[in-house]
Length: 279
Image (cartoon, rainbow, N blue to C red; front, top):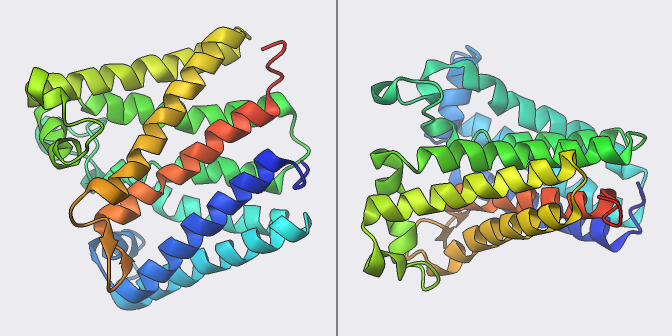
């Protein structure tokens, strides 16, 4: 890996932005339900308060931002960054084995509830592994980047076919100048179904394009994926409340949305590490 590559430099820059904003927001926000859930899962509630847990998580993200910034200058810091990203990712990901992450009324797994924000850490985990193990083959790095991206598109895309998810994204869609027109044509459930279908097709094109080394399919799928994650970032501007906070920089919705910057990094890394002339 060469941190001198424009693609890698931009990826690291996105990590600086996302981890610093998350870290500062967590420190300012203090204890909240997401932090308490993790603390309780590990049986640490008798030793660590929610406020202390939020401070610790915030500081950990701030250190990631620091090492990412250092990595922009000197490549040697990227391995340390990778270790931190792996640790920070695994802590919440392991909690997915808890039944509380799944929607019991829909049968539990794979009907994901509070775990929607958690599965995004698979993306950060892949980034951490790539930084920690730069000697991995380019093809391995491509698969590491593609799998968490496809996972979230299949998983949350599949959830779009449920009523609970269709209603859950309603506020995002109806306040977006880029997507609100869909409600003029289709009802809430059909709009959600179409978005879910788009997500599933996108993930399939990316995986099939990589597997079969089909350049056209990969380019189409990866551009479609990039559109999804860039659109998610537009909600920071269009969502009337919940994404940005004057007191804590990011609100609860903002914590969920900003993690899609990690998927933008995944797509960039796919473009960077795969030989598109032969893909």
